[in-house]
Image 1 (tube, helix red, strand yellow):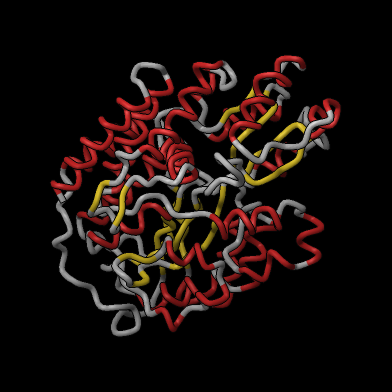
Image 2 (cartoon, one colour):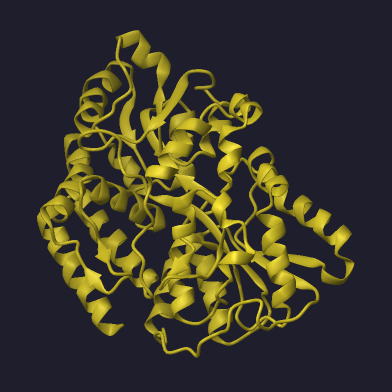
Length: 425
């Protein structure tokens, strides 16, 4: 999601929490609609970087005086957000009624019994882009409601490629060739994504592995599938880029914002990042305003299989006001609010119809590309122990990219570490 950034203390906190994870033996929780109550609500989220959410909730509070929402904003770093949320939920606290969670946490929170199952028929899920609904399900049950989606895009210097008579790359081979040959001619680095060992690297690694035809886990985290030629090919794509110099070593310390700034400052030919970058890179203080384009991420033989980002809205299983919370979920995913998510928050909505609205497409020309990328995207590996999986993937892949381990050795090591995590489940 938009606030997916990491800090060392957040990683440590997440690791400590995972060490005490109680497993999936939580008592079952009846779906919202069978019980619950009404009253004021507390919505917890990561930092609202665009401040649009406060205005959306102000409209709700004006029309729901007995069910007013208090917004609690946690730090921007996703690892810290998850640590604070899970600590509260594990303790059985009802402090937070509604949680705005990274899509990858849904399976973990659901398996632990922390969030309430939802009645699928109550919510307009048929009007959402189909892949985003998959991120909100676990064990065949809807456990959250998609709120914001995301898919990785390739930003490129349109002015530079046009000057060279080149088209934007559609394959890894084309990306490497242009990053190796064209970028240096113009004093640019070749390609960067989010390669610091944090959630963003897990996303980049999963995209590479899945685009090569591999996978990391299967059966909702019950089976390890990463030890394959396809997974080795995906990790090698990233590691070989650093060794070959067309991925700068500096990028091994990039999160979303560092990589965006590098592109916006005119230092990169190609950037993998989320849609929010578009408005910022086209802003008044950007050196590349009007000089870049956006296309789907390239893969081995054509468009890549992007990873779905974004956030889901979940209801605390211990909330005393779960009926009011369900109404808030309906409101936040209404057509009007979802339009505000895009126009005021610069975040991709989950409602399919907005991607075909002529006025919105004119204002946000990347919407058709984003829509196709979302439709082709897949969720991150689902697991009741997602945070442990996340930490393992990012650490191992970073070692491969830093040339401390071969891609084959890294994949074999990752398979062993994931097997140990699955066995503990």
